[in-house]
Length: 335
Image 1 (cartoon, rainbow, N blue to C red):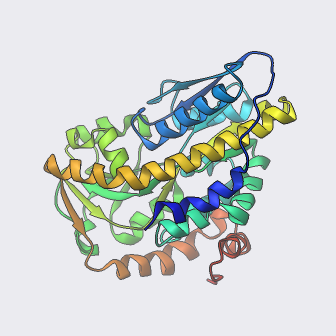
Image 2 (cartoon, rainbow, N blue to C red; image 1 turned 30 degrees about the horizontal axis):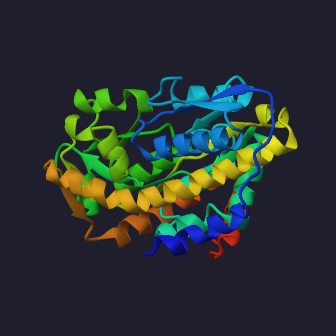
């Protein structure tokens, strides 16, 4: 998989370099749930640096990592109100504000990174953007954080039967809860801020995240000994801007926010491709055992035959699902 081919659809959107604009001085904050050395950290830093460079420091963007401004749900509420300009949050945490964004949490929606990029650029991105804007958010960047591989403290998972009897931390997502139930696991909704402690204390046996996020959050120190490469969902974490803050800006400032978001999206895509393998190798060096599934077709079958019909209305209905699939260039779906 070549980086150039994947980022081309983003690069063509940038066009010529943005001309520095004169603007009254202002300071804008962006909060992330993950540490600085994560995909969320890359997005926040690249976005901030680009804005400050293009405005020659007239617009200063301050980054706050690891939940310093509150957990993701709290930050999203503040962004919606306009008291916080930006935050980066997992897509599942946006679903309570706009259920159609929950389409992105449907298990086995994407098969690979190419499909993920197609689903977060072009017409697909425009459609998702209209949903978010109605809820008071403007999506500036789609943060690519890899498939949510399943980790646990008990045993390797190589087939669907292995997940039975294990308790997993999941975000407050009805779709992900339904997915784990369909697979035979035991999902337990726990806030992101409490996840490390819950794993460490054995409240749950496992969680799910990509390799970079696993390493950045040091889950190897929270009893996580085994990782299984289950491709049931790709973790997307948009950088969102408050529509209230956006509408108060000049047209030039608005254009800069959009362009900075695209620059950050291209940067995090490159980062994910280049650093994901390194993070995997480092995790293995620490003694984490990584397994591949022997029967992923069974996981996919459970998802499409059980979870999709069960959760279709929850994410906006069959028409909403198919509108998005069409925008992605994928076949339509029927119950």
